[in-house]
Amino acid sequence: MRSIYEIQQFLKTYGTIIYIGDRVADLELMEAEITELYNSQLIEQKDFDSALLLLRREIQKEIDKKK
Image (cartoon, rainbow, N blue to C red; front, side, top):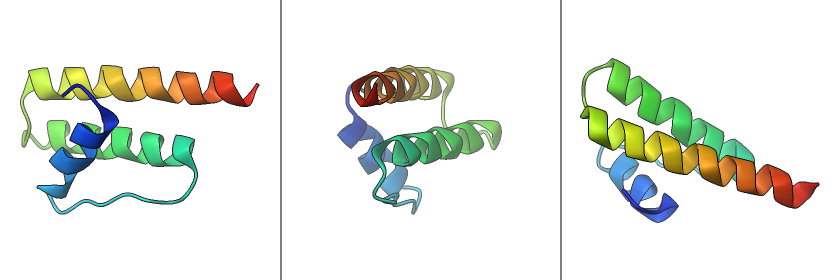
């Protein structure tokens, strides 16, 4: 996965659509969902790693933007 959009589309395949309205909260909820999918052994390690890295990077960018 190379973008937040790809992560959103990936989560949709599992029936998860996330939109709270707060970008950081949306990203954190996506991270929790990806983690839950991985812990349930529904996704592979490489998908988990790439999604988590991308989400954490994006969360940090959003936090830095607010400062």
